[in-house]
Image (tube, rainbow, N blue to C red; front, side, top):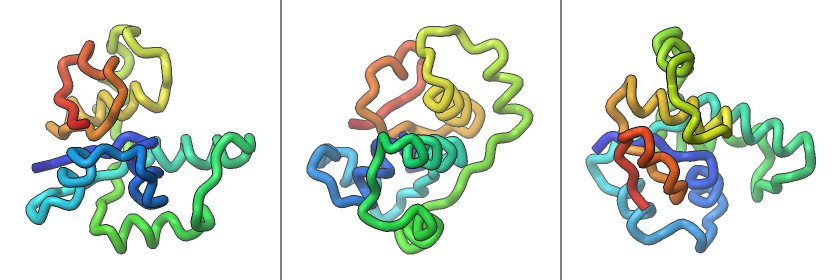
Length: 127
């Protein structure tokens, strides 16, 4: 099971929020799961924090430790991702979600997200 956590999924998981579905939590905590967090997620969090649109229970500087402690892997954005992004249809306009979608497609990852628009791209989601 290879999962890519959407930004809200990652935040809700590390914050221990109840909004995270039990199915999503089980997929993340599954013993054989390989969970990835996109660098786009960290970029989105940094922007929302600087705009005052987001609060984390731990300082942003502790996010790398949260990733490591939870056994997550940081997923970089590659040229292949940007190449695929350049031809991705505009079913979804959010630039961070579009990056997560292409990373799912190029890396064969299932996205853990409640965003139902991801299905328009043929990616597999868990929620």
